[in-house]
Length: 191
Image 1: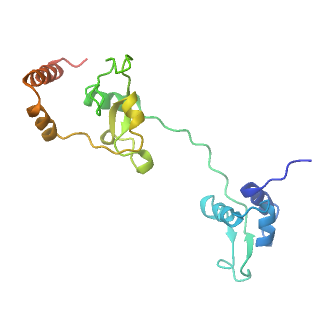
Image 2 (image 1 turned 135 degrees about the vertical axis):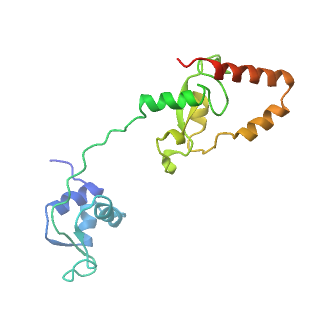
Image 3 (image 1 turned 30 degrees about the vertical axis):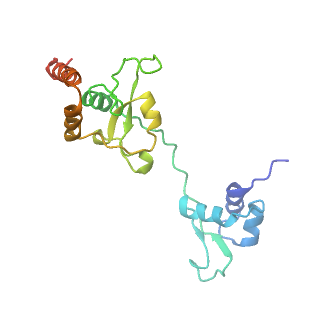
């Protein structure tokens, strides 16, 4: 004997067998396997999956506590595969960021604190979960360690005034090292 469906799957199967038929909340609760949240599952079918489920608010012939699947539900959308960031956009962001982590400053291939070569990833300035997009302006180079630690933390890259203030506070030796690095970076021929 096949296993009885419960929850949203049970409500789905129950309603599909009764298109156009009026059912009450007790029957829907039983179809859910007597789950407490059967009303929420019914709303999810209607509001999130677009099922044409009518209630007394939609049809005059229905009383409170009565529902009807007015017609067949919409076909589920085809599966969507995550679209990655294009190789071109990745290269543009890494080049713009000088192939260095924008949080800790380590360059690709340099040894990190654990003696491993730094690997750069693209991280979002505004996390995708907070509405950030896969755009050049919202991406930055991050090493593995910083990228892992930066999950859903929005941190703007430093401004040139902040960098200038940091350089002015640094020792002459560090200022010269920064100058040497910058002059090498901006006088090299692009490959």
